[in-house]
Image (cartoon, rainbow, N blue to C red; front, top):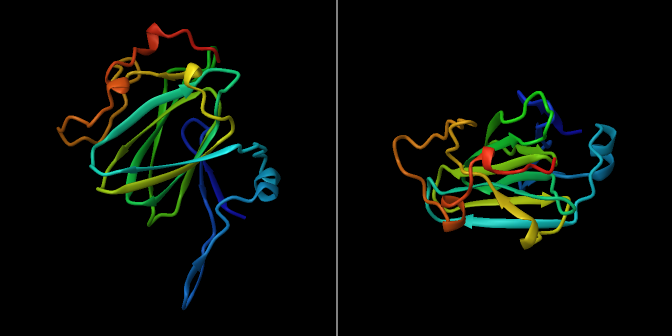
Length: 184
């Protein structure tokens, strides 16, 4: 069984699969539907996404999709290191507007499970970082949304070390949390 640890918002989980090493290298089951289900994680993954980010301090997010294409995500790093963030945008949630973070790296071999109702983003901490993530709904452009990464109401402490992040035009123009009508 993988090691599962709830973060400060208990619906967001760190999952660390077991690794079996020998003289050839290693083997690991990074996802096993039955074993996840035994731990109370019953999600149907429909799509895998992979990204390569060349520059460190590139920030992707905070992204989410509206229903009926709302997505849960299982995120892992294949190469490099990221500072991964989940923001609770569920109306009526006691943790609405709060964020949790987890450093994910190829070396640590950990993953983060982000449920539906959370905005997600990450900051690359090393050059040539590759991220792979499963999603529970396919991408849908008309349902794709973003929240401003530096929203003062949310107050994410991105480890930018005084640098300005590299942003897409979409992320730079994203609205604040108070400007969205969250569907969750």
